[in-house]
Length: 342
Image 1 (cartoon, rainbow, N blue to C red):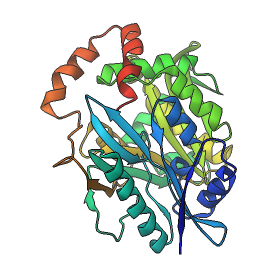
Image 2: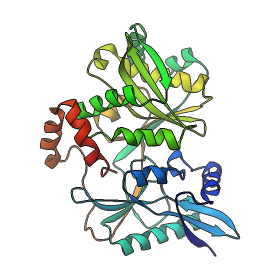
Image 3: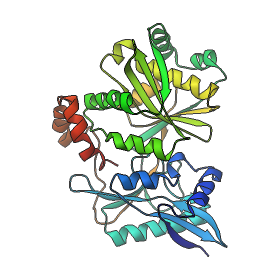
Image 4: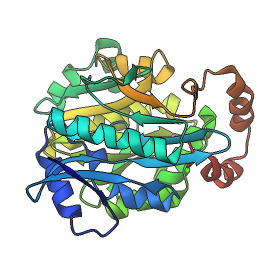
């Protein structure tokens, strides 16, 4: 039958793990083995399970434990990532899911969470509170623009008339200042700059930062992932002036064009958003249809799943207080909290 093993950092099977992810049609950027290094640097214990048969890897399941007094204790595939869950044949996936359940029971976590992108045929509880948005990338800039919904296309055209320029690099300095101001304004703790540096370090061929500038000053910036012909603008935002300049709209449109022309990408993954949130409505304006994410759960010590939604009334005071923090204070305090918001 199958034997289960645990991948460790620097394990010789890391290459075979990634080769398996590359070949599996459901393998995502978030299944790659180097996420283990990133998560360990954030202080989380990883359990990267893989199944073997006749000397070959036949399935993988990346897991990490996120534990804090404020937000609970959970075993997730994969924290800080949109997608996760087991890869392999149905039989192998059921085997790895059972291994994950046994591990969750052994660790006595609150719950196990598997972030599948597609519905699964198993007995785990499914809850869909997020949707993801994707679209195909047309052949050139004109066709990409024509494919955007009419009202959003008008906004993009308006942004193209602004005195904006773009740069591409691997430096986190301008990106971090821009992004941290954006999430502070939303009332969300930012990750440490070292987290973004880890992503660039461990995924040099899959990452890139696009920054929009006005008179040389960064006004919007996004750190994107590139994998299997797809671009994923994962961490992006703009300063207060971005709204008037439409620089976020400019940024995402330029990323689409760059990904198609220079990176040979065929699809654009706009990531996940909470159902009916502001980000959810914004992405719909681009003409992309939301697709529910069927995340799956197994309760261990918890009697119900936690409600970590920003709309949860008990977080409203915190969000409003965070929005009033000086940027430097939010940059200092944010990493102490964000590392637990898996």
